[in-house]
Length: 134
Image 1 (cartoon, one colour):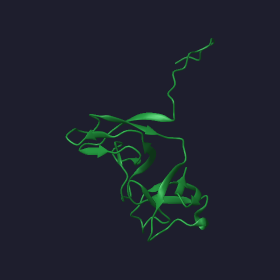
Image 2 (image 1 turned 180 degrees about the vertical axis):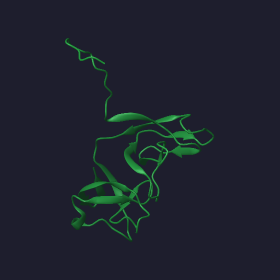
Image 3 (image 1 turned 90 degrees about the vertical axis):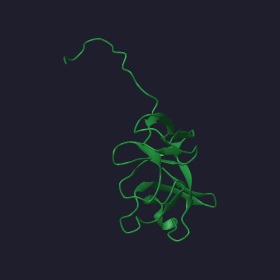
Image 4 (image 1 turned 120 degrees about the horizontal axis):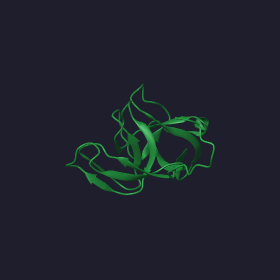
């Protein structure tokens, strides 16, 4: 391509809510933690070492009988979400500004569970509501 010399109407997408392709055979629930699996398809969070945290599902979608990418779901990103704190491996004040880790579709923990959990994000606040994760 050649550099342009006039204004350009550059396409863009809102980075706060994105439509993501769902993994085969999954149903996702609104308000749960959204992750991408190793193949790049979205599902609800669970304990696994190969997931990428995306944000929170804004809607419930049933792709239980579909293949990878047959359906999409809206995922809210670029926010700070409050997740439950894991009782056996709790995120504490000492975790402020550090990574926390995915336990299930609504819970985070302080450690990676000896390499069995994927990172959820950075801990911003720990309070009576839970762990606020960026």
